[in-house]
Amino acid sequence: MGLSLFKNCSVYPSCPAPERAFAPNPNPAKFQIFETKQVGANVVVKIRYPDCTNYEGVKICLFVNTTEADLKRRDRLDPHFCEDSLSPFARFKPTVSGWEAALKMAETCHV
Image 1 (tube, rainbow, N blue to C red):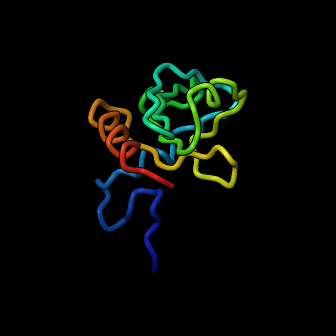
Image 2 (tube, rainbow, N blue to C red; image 1 turned 90 degrees about the vertical axis):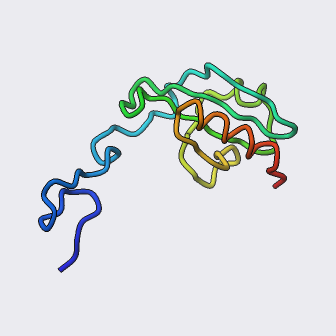
């Protein structure tokens, strides 16, 4: 007998399923970049995906070896880790502390 990671467990009926199990995935073609910070060869970016409901659709991503201009020229920007040449190196909780952590990691990340 196994436990599902994406449903309420029968042993502990009060444990909630993860939020992402119910939130729609962000549409990489529908996004708005509303904050960026170039840190050396890396960029920290705050992106809003209007079709995504968790955290009001906001994602904070760290992209390495790219520029703000490179990101802003894109017509698609997927926040998921993938084989795309412009996949985020890391993602952070979309909060003030998440933004600060992303900036610190961007300072030390030399990939």
